[in-house]
Image 1: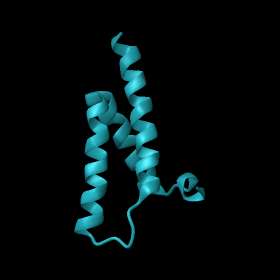
Image 2: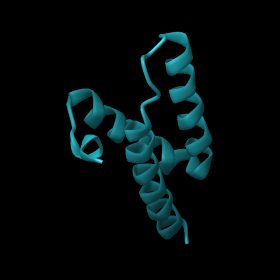
Image 3: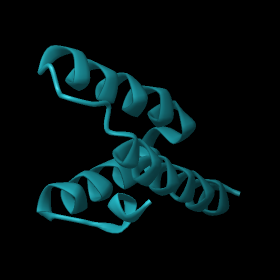
Length: 73
């Protein structure tokens, strides 16, 4: 649980990018993000799947979708 709240520069850039993507294409960005994380885990042979990144990015994507919904309403 503590890993979810630890941010580095790469995480902050990723959060900002996924926020912009969710503002642009909405909830379609959620399966794209999960697919990207799976691809990275398989392609780069990471020692474990990074669930904390999925949780962080999912929260930001959902927040972006809410903002998008409120702006287009």
